Image (tube, rainbow, N blue to C red; front, side, top):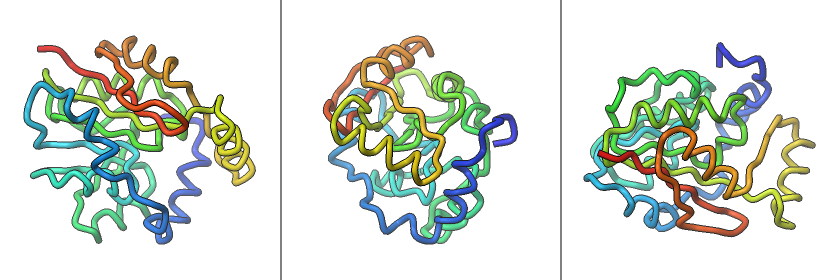
Length: 193
């Protein structure tokens, strides 16, 4: 991430890329309630900070692209048949209003400038499209344990509650809802026509 002063997480992900798919993948059923909020057919999906492309691969869409800052992750995505583009999530190398859905799954807490990332997601969404953010609630018992574990591992993670993330999505100019609550929650942002 060229514009970020914080790059520790990118280096860690680059080093663990070959092992990344050993973690449980996000399943379509977790994303379905948020996908249903799109007011258009979802055919072109951008998986921001998508690593090996697990998220976009779960959707079975005609076109899925991963944007990630870790070259090792992109290499694994491409090995799995997913187009990958190296880029900064806060300055997406994607045209305005060019995708039907933006996924940010288990990734926003690793990004140095989350507000800028959400603004970029809003910029690249077509009207009627949907932003889907899957994150973890740091106020739950499991969330507090996750925060501690990530920091001990060396990540510079910054977690948000579902309400705080929904407010950030609204500030980016999208409608916001929380279709899935709990330790692992989903915030969806819709772009109006």
